[in-house]
Each structure stands twice: as C-alpha cells, then as structure tokens.
Length: 190
Image (cartoon, rainbow, N blue to C red; front, side):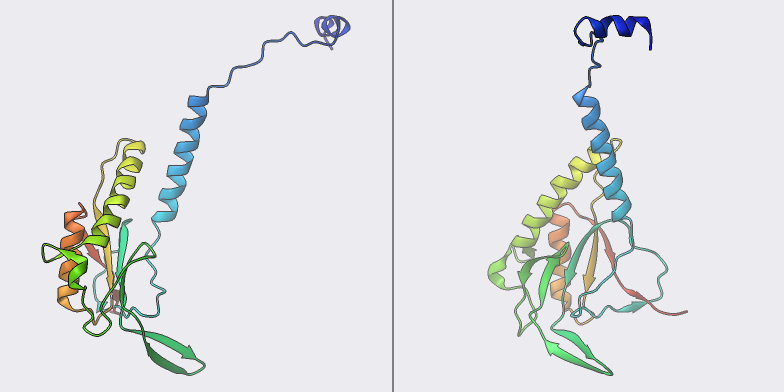
C-alpha cells in the first residue's frame, strides 16, 4: 500500500478520492443499440409457417423473404395428424398480423365481412394494426443509423384464398404504407 492511502485511512477511514461520474445518456445509447441489434438479428431469419390451417402454394422461385411484417390469411381447414392419418377439420378463417388475429373472415363465403371494410376494399382493423406497426418501425428505423422505413410486408395465404380477399389485403397494406409486397410459398424441388 502506498503511504498516501495509509494516511487517509488513519484519519478516519474516509475515502477522499473523487467518484467517477456516469453519463446516463451514454448508457441509454448503448442499451438502445444493443436492443436494436438484437431485434434485427432475430428478425432476419426465414419465415416459418406453423399454422395447420395454411396450405401454401408451390413455386420455383429461389428468392428468400426479407425482414418484414407478416400478414397471414388462414384457410377454412386445418390439418390434424394422428399416427398415419391426416384429417382436415373445418376452422374459422382469419387475417393474422404478426401472430395476432386482426379479423375473422366469414366462414361460409370465406370473404371479409362488408361492415369490416371502408371504401370497398380497405379492411379497417387491418389498416389500424398496420399503422401501429408502421409507427413503431419508423422509430426503430430512425434509431438504427438513420435508415428509412422500407414498407415491406410478407403475405402468407392459404392456396384456396379467394382473389377478392387477397385484393382487399393488398389494398389495405398499400393504404397503410406497406407497398413492398412479397408472397410466401413452398419452394418446389427442381
């Protein structure tokens, strides 16, 4: 021990060394960067569809889906597999955004109910949810190196989804600022 330290200790045990000042702003910046980096790492993974009521169409496309909001239109039937038997059970079709049910479709006609739309094509509940997600993505994009909002959306739809439902979803996504569409498919073996 140095003699300087011993002298201070003998005087009453007080430590007269100045305490370092911690900047809260710097710590917040570090935590924010770590959080955004972690979110981006987990969001880059490929899309997996585990919903038993979605039968994806097959395609020969080799392009992978980018990081985007996922809008899923479930089918009228779900698969129940027991041992060697696969059974189809009727289910309520719905529109789901990032694993949250936004709207149930009509189970008979497999269409968006007329009272759930505005101006013919725009699905009110879907637009409201997408606008909320857009505001969150704009804040995240601004915090990550000044990037801009990209408006990407991946549409996952059962292969038996009526075209009118797809049109309603596409128009609604566009109205909410998500104009960069991608469709999820099953890659057909070459």
